[in-house]
Length: 153
Length: 153
DNA sequence: CCGCAAATGACAACATGTTGTCAACATGAA
DNA sequence: TTCATGTTGACAACATGTTGTCATTTGCGG
Image (cartoon, rainbow over all chains, first blue to last red; front, top):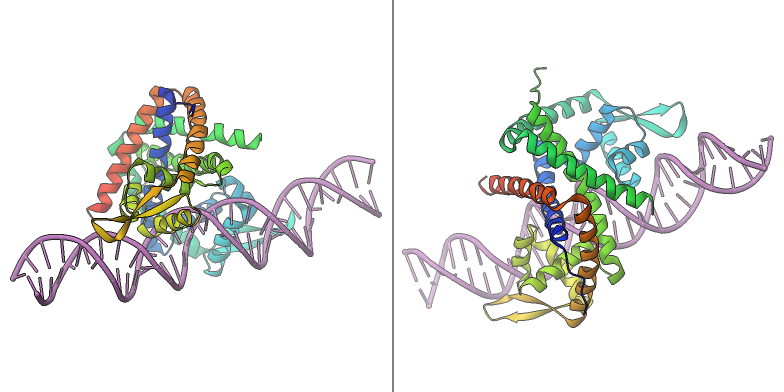
């Protein structure tokens, strides 16, 4: 068989990955819960937030979020159909229209943001700022490492 | 507007959640990459691993993995159709058949496990065992907190 | 200016996960 | 035993994300 065995730090890494994937499931559910009273979901919230942050095309937004262009396009088209988002002509590119929030989109996003603040404040106090920052640093470092690895392949 | 604003620890929590969701995307991709040479995916790997760990029914496996019963059922049916997994009669329950790995399923899982060990060892060494264990502890604590909250609702 | 590579949106197919519903089975209380 | 309740598998509908393909647009190099 000659199975390569895991080192202690390899074991720690494997357990870490499992815990991250499990937590991600919980966090997506929580995001849906925060967005639901405004008729939205985690995915739509993410796109609305990106649109408010700065005026971007769909493809630019997808890159910023680390998602496939086509998935963001589908969400954005739904949001446009529901009147939360509007496509504006892009002077620099005829096809790549720019996403802007409508007043209704602004309102929905603000409601969700308000709920999220209460939620994040409570859990942030519970878990402790310093521990969260240390964990975030590790996680971001690892995500960058994996992202770069993929980019260089 | 009277928007509730985020405290410093709330801010830290919000950044933490974003980093976790982002990393989860990378980890799923990496899992697919590890499983792909054996013709599998992250989701199938997870079910195969659960089946090897102990002989469970589909519903029990879903609970152990924190997923919906129906999703695991679909994956398991595919694995059975491909001959990696077999349903065995359950003496304790006529409908809830037990999943067992076939030799072909064992072989596939072992290949993936071998690749995963190399990968986890390398990244574990890179990130450091102690940091990973501290981060895992925080993440598991939070996942438990969120899980309990949902259960009590 | 021309032509070609890259970016972009549109469309389709698929993988993974969710919820809802239903009938069959298991279990415990009356 | 019988009935209510919960568990389980099966099926359908949907949300979210992926990859692949195509035509159009952009922009750059010759």
